[in-house]
Image 1: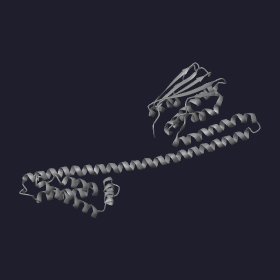
Image 2 (image 1 turned 90 degrees about the vertical axis):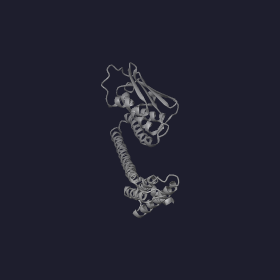
Image 3 (image 1 turned 180 degrees about the horizontal axis):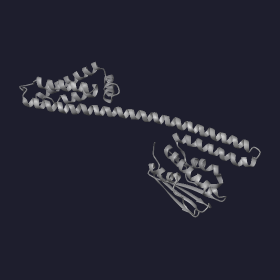
Length: 321
């Protein structure tokens, strides 16, 4: 019985159609049960000729395919005309009902086949998406590996060039190591997520730990949100290093965050940096900052103050991924 149910499920979903012999036996059983049901109904309503055969056609088509469904519909129609229970005999009205019965059976069989075709297409798309996701993961892993190798090469070249200038090298070496640690962190959080403080320290560490302060409770970020925020923090930190607080000897950065229910608010506040006299046209980084959090029902507000850049990021923290 369990095997039969499993085969019915596979046939219904179009995974593995049953054999022709098993399909014919199943259709015959459905017709037999439908005929017995018709005989029982004849004691109450002798003019019920074709209605009991509708379920037989449906199950036969779902199990064995549209050919078995068509055969079941034809045989059911013949049985409805030929077999007579009680005093009822075939007349013109019964043949009219036969035509209607076959029309409804055709719609039923088409519906079953359409549903099966949709399931097959969904499985094909799902399989393709899985393959593309595996390829993406492989490509990202390869790019991360190459990036790590290039950073190691840059580290080795600079060490060779500056080996006679230990003071300069002592300032460059920890920053390169911090950048490498940031790349490793991003590769890890793509699957597991991380704490927001660890993410910020990893992104801001290369600019010197005395240049920034972090205010907020420990908060674990789910993987997708962590990756999104890491891209945003990297863009803001890069901008601060080129034009903002980190480009000035006295510039400072304060990052604070609060959580209310499932809403996260992050404030990025730069001070003592160069004054912003003119804002250039929005580039890729600005567009990233403004649109990255929309997937989390969030937004970013960027203000260019005299004291430095001020950015407020708000979003929803996913409960699960």
